[in-house]
Image 1 (spheres, protein in one colour):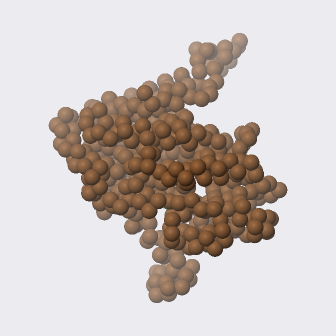
Image 2 (cartoon, rainbow, N blue to C red; image 1 turned 90 degrees about the horizontal axis):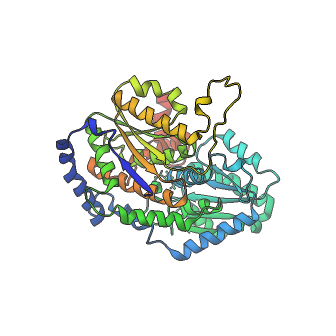
Length: 444
Ligand code: PA5
């Protein structure tokens, strides 16, 4: 089994009647999602992406990735939020958080345009010195400030280094099919473009060109990724007691109603840390609205057991944990017997780190549930493309079901605009004059 779900460490926190109360709402959410009758139903294209995608574009993605691998040392991926997190999460999950430092045939991949830090951008610029660079700028709206600034800087670098024609061969734009500043610029300059489908929102877009091009550049097997997602689509299509995805969504909702207002996504593998960032955006932007929603947070154990562990064990009882574990890893270290046993660790001789990690998980799950923190456990067979595809789809669908159960539109993000309007006003963007005066008066 590629992914399995275990709720036994949460079972002491609710009774059968509570579950019976939630079940019909899962059915309702399922019907809304499958019949396209729920809020935000113009953004549910992600449901069928694993089987219903543009095959010609998919072939172009593979071709572009091959070219990039052959003519590039540093691949710069520009984007923020949903136009960034999925690709980075997938690359770290499949390869390593140390991917760039490893000996490999594929280019280094750096992500920029996901902050407004001049220091971070100049660090990456310096990593491009004397190396062959290509750029993938990703923005569905084509107007987001952070990536637009970074793209301006990298376009200039490429044009200076390769000339306008040379730069054109190294710039790939992933954006709306027809509209937006980036699309206009790409058409004007003749850059190769890939499409973010109209009915797929940013945080649900990792299985479109948004994620697929960067993921292909790192050498990952896209066929397997899409197959994992397609199999998950079939596996989680039926509303019934065996649907683990729905079980997870329903339990999140049930625990939320019982005062567990925070979900901690836990992993024991550092390679999963960016997946947790992707998860936080997926659930945070989808559910956190109308003064409702679970706050999604994340920790990597055992690292964070030495920082947040105290709080989780004994602090305010407002959270539950969703633990993602792996049945198999792709590499391991075995502890050897030491002659002097000076560190007293010979009782571990012959054991692998994975075994010890497993015991850390088992000990922690029991300690935390004893401390009043329900634990849900998702076991992934191994960190490969197929399982990643399934996991992505599992979380996307659980998020949609969960959002509908909460009574929100899981596919919009109206709150994201508030800071942008203020920032534009304070930066003096034309059209924001009145707001600027008002904000400056408040700041001074
Ligand atoms: O999920 C979302 O819609 C957002 O996080 C966007 O992905 C993010 O704001 C970036 O937007 P864009 O791709 O339009 O630049």
